[in-house]
Length: 151
Ligand code: ZN
Picture: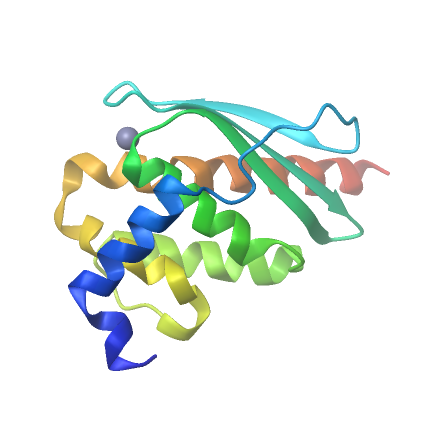
């Protein structure tokens, strides 16, 4: 990771860019996607996250709903990061991200733009915002694996 990526201004710009122009910000009415509803009691965040998971690959992730800057940016970055990855890779990324948010050691290379959210580890009241979309994806992965296990 370059030093530029550790510049607080650069990190802030990444968050604002994903907030103003969120990626994968839509919901498709397609039965190939599984969807979950996530809401926060401590913030306006009330979003749906959907994922298309096939043969252990996360082919696509979308989200939409009411969401604050942190939850919009963190979910947009998450969708960018895990799209096209295997469930195994996605779980590693998710765990590194939770480690960062909890103020523990983490792998910057694996998190790419998600390191923009590193400051949240010092703002306990924003942790829910920064992880709501990630928990949604994790839930969809768990459901997908549970269903595959039954087959
Ligand atoms: Zn929020």
